[in-house]
Length: 229
Ligand SMILES: C[S@@+](CC[C@H](N)C(=O)[O-])C[C@H]1O[C@@H](n2cnc3c(N)ncnc32)[C@H](O)[C@@H]1O
Image 1: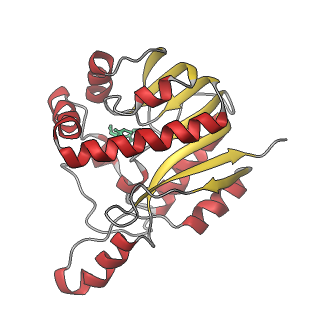
Image 2: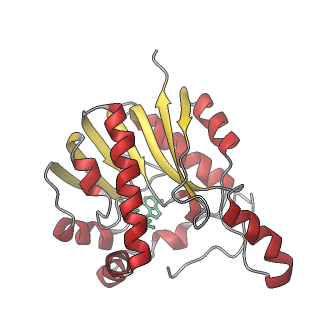
C-alpha cells in the first residue's frame, strides 16, 4: 500500500484525499490485485472473507440490487454474485474499475460506477444492500468514518455489511502497548459501541461483528440491518 496514515486524529481538516489517488493508474491497481492473487496469506484472507460474505448475504436472502463500494478490482464480487440480480461495482479509482471490468466479471449482471463513498450518486434507500470492505481503516479521522457509514446507510434500504479495524482486537492492543517503544503509527480503528450508536442514529441495528481471524488480524465485519418503518 503506497499511502499510510501517519497519525490518527479527529482534526476534521485532515482528509483521506491522498489515498483516493492511490489506484487511479492502471499499473497501481494491477499491482494491488496481483498481491491478493499471489500471496498465500492474502489468499487465506480472501477465502475467509468469501465465507463470511456468503453466510451474511445468505441470511439476508436474494436481493434485486447490491452495491459493492469500494469494489477495488472485484476481489469480492464472486460471493456477492450469488445473492443479487444486479451488482453495482463502485470505486473512486478509475484504475480499479478498469481492472475489475476485465478481471472481475461474475455470473450476475454488473455495472461499474466511479463514485466516492462520501457522495454516492444514488437516492435514499434506492438499493437493497451495500457491502463496504477494507475502506474505513484507510480513513484518517472518525469524522470521515462516520460520514462514510451514514452515506452507505442512506442509500441502503435493508442492510450494510462493512469491515473495520477493531480498536479492542488483540492485534491492535499489542500494537498500542508496543507503541511507546517502537513508535509505529497508530492504526485507524473503530469501536463496536461506536458502530452500535451510528447504526441506531441511522435507523438500523448492529446485528453481528465477526472477526476475520481472532488473533492474526484486527479486521472485523459488521452487519447492520435497517429497522422496519
Ligand atoms: C483496500 S481496497 C479494497 C477494495 C475491495 N473492497 C477489496 O476488499 O478488495 C480500498 C479501495 O477503496 C478505494 N477508495 C479509496 N477512497 C475511496 C472513497 N472515498 N470512495 C470510494 N472508494 C474509495 C480505493 O480506490 C481502493 O480501490
